[in-house]
Length: 486
Image (cartoon, rainbow, N blue to C red; front, side, top):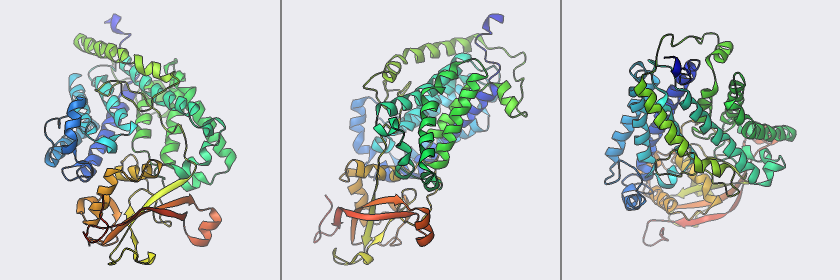
């Protein structure tokens, strides 16, 4: 029908394929991360047990399948269901059916993962959690291979990328002076939550290049997002710039799936002709003769109106002097506010956890052994690994400790679990220096870390230089005759 031509984005099938399969792949990673870590962090015997939190969740009226009951077995069922559904979308199976089939698959992922996020407390308090939820809900209405992609949904996804990028840019401009005087990247690669294998090399780049990084960031976040709504090929070029800048962040750090969501969503602005020009194997004609069913048009228009209505407060937030960062304005986690790194920490403080088998707490330092974490810095010789898009939640929370306080309830429980040699907790770590044996004492020490210079690395083989500051938590033990954990 001719009058429906405005609704059909016939030149954006490649974008739809990337969006659906890419977001589904990230949901698969998110459920896998949850299945591996949630029981030890938040399970029945976790550091912040969900059963103890459910009364609060009920009062907050947060939508969750665990609203009335939580068990580790139920959590496992939710994760396996999410992994299975996500895998079918990555394989393209629901997309072969009618438009409602991938819609239901994505809405199932959204509801299942929202059930987890809404009881995840501080371990799920990151901006990329609500970003994945909003992305999954919006992508749900891209339809299937039986009809062209809907233009309004692609525009809503571009609007999501705009809020993500422009919101982060405004947070920085309004935040620390280092973003305005172009010195932020003097520190960022060294002090970011979880460095990657190339972070040290990025940190050691000449300072003029770090200033170029900041200028490029401001351009990519404050100027480029407006061109996502421009005619082609400007929109595709804008998307390409965002994708390249996000890939730089992927290569120089570990930010879970934050950067990958931004990369995937940016393809909403990439048209098939542009994609074909860059990659000739991408077809130009996908939907010859295909028509959009009227009932599907009605569903998409309804969802479009809903998301536009929910955009009012996030739009005001972008231009507010009291701009909120990573905030939801409704309990369904739709059309959120985003932003990150409004300020950059200038020094890296690490909390190092040690234990000893000695009878007395005043044992010499060489009798204390350090627990190794998978992602966060510890061993000064170890090359940081690339973990993203997989999310190491314990390691991220360890980065926040010196910025807030080490006296967090979950951290004391963590130390308690180490004293018990609790196996689920130890599996969250890279190395247990006691091979499953219970230490008699544990302590937490505060260190100042910095990247070694090239000359220092050649001399010592150490990638980090660290200096002991103080005992953040003095030696504690489970024994009633010794100092006990609070």
